[in-house]
Length: 100
Image (cartoon, rainbow, N blue to C red; front, side):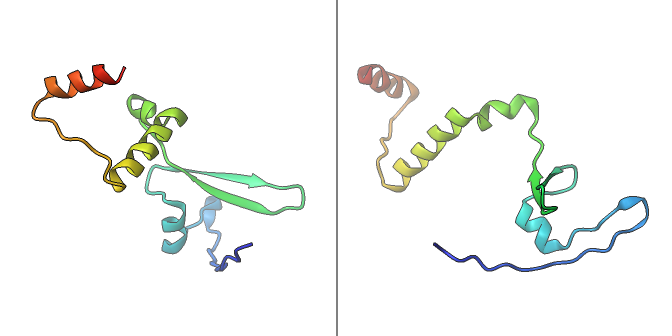
Protein backbone atom coordinates (compact mmCIF):
# COMPACT_ATOMS: atom_id res chain seq x y z
CA UNK A 1 0.00 0.00 0.00
CA UNK A 2 1.36 3.39 -1.00
CA UNK A 3 1.78 5.85 1.83
CA UNK A 4 0.62 9.39 1.06
CA UNK A 5 2.22 12.46 2.55
CA UNK A 6 -0.30 14.51 4.50
CA UNK A 7 0.06 18.23 4.95
CA UNK A 8 -1.96 20.23 7.45
CA UNK A 9 -3.19 23.73 6.72
CA UNK A 10 -5.23 26.07 8.89
CA UNK A 11 -7.75 28.83 8.33
CA UNK A 12 -9.38 31.26 10.76
CA UNK A 13 -13.16 31.43 11.18
CA UNK A 14 -14.36 34.99 10.56
CA UNK A 15 -17.66 36.74 11.06
CA UNK A 16 -20.66 35.11 9.42
CA UNK A 17 -18.88 31.71 9.49
CA UNK A 18 -16.55 32.67 6.63
CA UNK A 19 -13.20 30.98 5.98
CA UNK A 20 -10.48 31.94 3.55
CA UNK A 21 -8.93 28.76 2.23
CA UNK A 22 -5.15 28.66 1.88
CA UNK A 23 -3.92 28.79 -1.74
CA UNK A 24 -2.55 25.23 -1.49
CA UNK A 25 -5.99 23.93 -0.45
CA UNK A 26 -7.69 25.76 -3.32
CA UNK A 27 -5.22 24.25 -5.78
CA UNK A 28 -5.65 20.75 -4.31
CA UNK A 29 -9.44 21.03 -4.63
CA UNK A 30 -9.16 22.39 -8.20
CA UNK A 31 -11.70 25.11 -7.44
CA UNK A 32 -12.02 28.76 -8.32
CA UNK A 33 -14.43 31.59 -7.63
CA UNK A 34 -18.03 30.48 -8.17
CA UNK A 35 -17.35 26.77 -7.64
CA UNK A 36 -18.95 24.89 -4.77
CA UNK A 37 -17.46 22.66 -2.11
CA UNK A 38 -19.07 19.60 -0.56
CA UNK A 39 -18.60 18.49 3.04
CA UNK A 40 -18.94 14.84 4.04
CA UNK A 41 -19.20 14.31 7.79
CA UNK A 42 -18.59 10.81 9.17
CA UNK A 43 -20.16 9.44 12.34
CA UNK A 44 -16.88 9.98 14.22
CA UNK A 45 -16.81 13.67 13.28
CA UNK A 46 -14.19 13.51 10.52
CA UNK A 47 -14.93 15.96 7.71
CA UNK A 48 -13.94 15.47 4.08
CA UNK A 49 -14.00 18.53 1.82
CA UNK A 50 -14.40 18.11 -1.96
CA UNK A 51 -14.33 20.70 -4.70
CA UNK A 52 -17.44 20.74 -6.86
CA UNK A 53 -16.84 22.51 -10.15
CA UNK A 54 -19.97 23.91 -11.72
CA UNK A 55 -20.49 22.71 -15.29
CA UNK A 56 -22.73 24.76 -17.60
CA UNK A 57 -25.75 22.67 -18.61
CA UNK A 58 -24.90 22.94 -22.32
CA UNK A 59 -21.55 21.24 -21.59
CA UNK A 60 -22.81 18.51 -19.24
CA UNK A 61 -22.78 15.90 -22.04
CA UNK A 62 -18.96 16.05 -22.06
CA UNK A 63 -18.79 14.95 -18.42
CA UNK A 64 -21.07 11.93 -18.89
CA UNK A 65 -19.36 8.74 -17.62
CA UNK A 66 -19.49 7.02 -21.04
CA UNK A 67 -18.23 10.10 -22.89
CA UNK A 68 -15.31 10.44 -20.47
CA UNK A 69 -14.43 6.78 -20.99
CA UNK A 70 -14.27 7.47 -24.74
CA UNK A 71 -12.06 10.51 -24.08
CA UNK A 72 -9.65 8.36 -22.04
CA UNK A 73 -9.52 5.72 -24.78
CA UNK A 74 -8.88 8.35 -27.43
CA UNK A 75 -6.10 9.92 -25.34
CA UNK A 76 -4.46 6.50 -24.91
CA UNK A 77 -4.64 5.84 -28.66
CA UNK A 78 -3.15 9.25 -29.46
CA UNK A 79 -0.35 8.74 -26.92
CA UNK A 80 0.41 5.32 -28.46
CA UNK A 81 0.53 6.83 -31.96
CA UNK A 82 -2.53 4.91 -33.16
CA UNK A 83 -3.99 7.71 -35.26
CA UNK A 84 -4.91 8.14 -38.90
CA UNK A 85 -4.86 11.32 -40.98
CA UNK A 86 -7.28 12.26 -43.75
CA UNK A 87 -7.10 14.82 -46.55
CA UNK A 88 -10.72 15.89 -46.08
CA UNK A 89 -13.88 15.17 -44.12
CA UNK A 90 -15.36 13.01 -46.88
CA UNK A 91 -12.46 10.55 -46.83
CA UNK A 92 -12.69 10.43 -43.02
CA UNK A 93 -16.39 9.58 -43.14
CA UNK A 94 -15.76 6.98 -45.85
CA UNK A 95 -13.19 5.29 -43.59
CA UNK A 96 -15.64 5.34 -40.68
CA UNK A 97 -18.32 3.72 -42.85
CA UNK A 98 -15.90 0.96 -43.84
CA UNK A 99 -15.26 0.20 -40.15
CA UNK A 100 -18.95 -0.50 -39.61
